[in-house]
Amino acid sequence: MERRDFLKAGAVPAALGAAGGLAAPAVAQQANRKVTWRLTLSFPRNLETLYGAATTFSRIVSEATQGEFTIRVFSPGELVPALQAREATSNGSVESCFTASSYSIGTDPAFMFGTVLLFGLNSRQQLAWMYELDGLGKLNRLLYEKHNVLGFPLASTGAQMGGWFRKEIRSPEDLRGLKFRIGGLAGHVFQRLGSVPQQIAAGDIYPSLERGTIDAAEWIGPYDDEKLGLYKVAPYYYYPGWWEGTGILHLFVNKPAWEALPADYRSIVHNASITATQLTMARYDALNPPALLRLVAQGAQVRPFPNTVLDACYDETVKLHEEYSRDPVYAELYRDMSNFRTESYRWLQLAEYAFDSYQIRRLRR
Image (cartoon, rainbow, N blue to C red; front, side, top):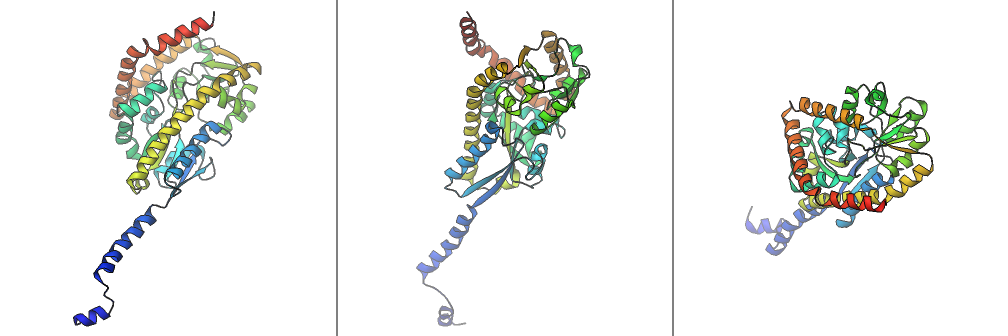
């Protein structure tokens, strides 16, 4: 073909050609910024503290991207059952989920560390370890990525209560035969002490207690426990929840879905998750005190676990950590968190704890 025939056949001026060459990738790039994810939850809508963490996160992401990145929130059972959220995210059935990392200990006991270290860190310590000491990076590199997900904190509950019991707990012997709804590795500890642990989703706890299928149940703390109505069927409310000095709940995202996001969207997701975590912790700190007063007014009998029970649980927890540390990933995460616990207490006992202890004693005069 001669040059003049080529021009007639559809060649365009250089300026337009350059513009056309840029336009196609620009259009494609713009189209790629329209993203819709599904976020399935392990927590029911009536627990608005936790459900609200997910909706807050979704709203922040949408606002930061001018509506280009939409995350649709689904209640437990709408897409997948509550306790299968992480697995559904791993296999790509959904792009993301909001759940407890500890719900996956059946897959690998090290999943517990994303939520808490038994007899371990409080909320501030856990978040410091995750954000400032590469704890979150280690969880992702050593554990989560092996299961095709990446994890980010999305909520912090603060220290939790020890749960609701139909009968009093006076000694370790009272734990024998106790059918106890309790999640994570704490169930393994209670099992060693003769209890029968049950992992039951939030919406099934009340009917299980009411029917006598279980004898006791722990959830989070006064505000959420009041929502579930547990005080109506189990009057004894024990503390502390030694297995959850904090409760860090996770946003898990499918790894290929994450890698397909533009870099700025990834940053927005990360920052939105941090904001939702802080807001949730603030909500619990504000809502739990009046809820506790309401529970007591409605007949809840607040009791401390006897020291003999705490000591028995502590001793079995140490043995459990030693046994599970035969796995190198578990051992590394346990060692890392334990070392930080020791180091941070050297400071906290002089600052936060000394101040708080004095205030509490003074106000009780």
